[in-house]
Amino acid sequence: MALLELDKVAAFYGNIQALRGISITVERGEIVTLIGSNGAGKTTTLRTIAGVLRPRTGTVRFDGADLAHVPAHRIARLGIAHSPEGRRIFPRMTVRENLELGAFARGRADLHEEYKHVFTLFPRLEERIGQTAGTLSGGEQQMLAIGRALMMKPRLLMLDEPSLGLSPLLVETIYGIIAEINAAGVPILLVEQNAHKALGVAHRGYVIETGRIVKHGTGRELLESPDVQRAYLGL
Image (cartoon, rainbow, N blue to C red; front, top):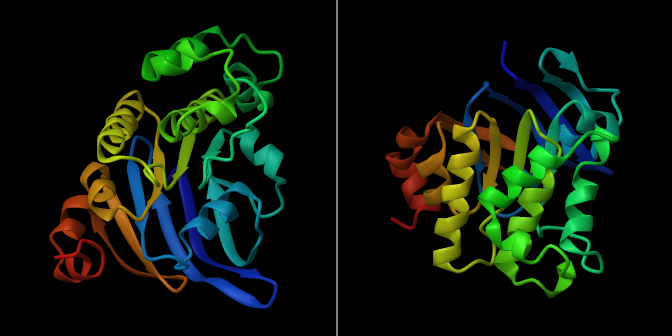
């Protein structure tokens, strides 16, 4: 049984259909990437998994449980952590306060190990623990967004455009950390416009166009696909 399974999911914003029967899976231990152009349905897919948007038809299952009627906060408590597009940190709160909010679903659990893990991955956050989050650089804010999601001790980490707006050097840093998180046993569903970086780190990938999955395969297979190279890799 896959850890996460979407089966023929259709989702709408009002009367506008955003997802048109998509089916994807994420197995335990995998990095799976979803690539596509702006407006293709990548972010909508993550929002639907997280319970922010409800599927009109089809099913979303996590570890065998149907999420159709589970509210978003309970989905988070099941272990699905979402680092959203645009980071969505709380700019007037400190780094520490942002990280604490990431662990809200864990109640009064001892967070010592989670802080240690986040600061090992992102030592800069420990240096800025008392700093207001809105004063961090763009790269530091992205680190905070991922660190906040990790504070939940996720069973599945969803990352939406983690390299957006970052310098090439910081992109390399973030992707090294993504690989490290996965190597520690955390499955990752990765949404990216930087298809080359995403497919380079992913075990498998899906190509989504206008709300439909049009191609899937291993990361290497998609990197070597002429269609993917023309459409998303600039080759």
